[in-house]
Length: 168
Image (cartoon, rainbow, N blue to C red):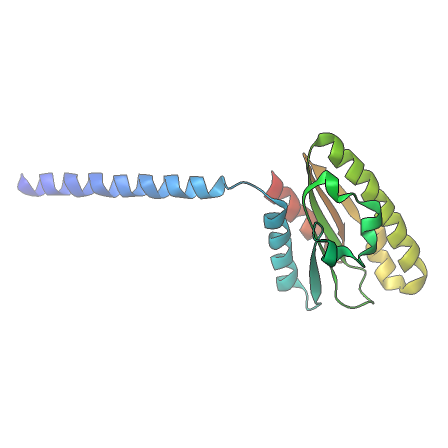
C-alpha cells in the first residue's frame, strides 16, 4: 500500500513536470515574429546550403544602405524593420530582402518599390552574367500580412518555403 502511494505521488510529479515543460515550449513557439528572426532563419539556411558568402544589411541604418542601390526604391519610413542579404562578390545576383512594414498600406507601397528593384536587377543581369540572370528571372516577391520577402537566389524555392513557415 505504501509503495502504491509513493508510485502515485511520483506519477503526479512526473505529469506536473511534463505539463510545465509543454507550456514552456508552447510559450517559446509563440515568440513574436520579426524581420530580424526571419532574415536570421533564411541566412542559416543559406549557410548550410551554399558555399557562397553573403553580406547582411540593416535597411534602417543609413551608413549600411548608403551604397545599396535598391534603397532608391524603398522608403525606410514605411518600414518597421528591414534587412537584406546580398552576395559578397559582384558576380553574385543573390539578393534577399525581408521587410516588416509599419502597416498594410505601407506594405503595398514597399511591394511596388520591390517590383522596381526587380526591374533594375533584371536590367543589370540580363547582359552581365547569363547564368546569374536565370536566378533573377526566377525571383519571388511574396507578402504575408505586413511582411514582404524579395528573393533572388539559386535556392529561391527553399527560401520561399522557409519565409512562409516563419511568418505564418
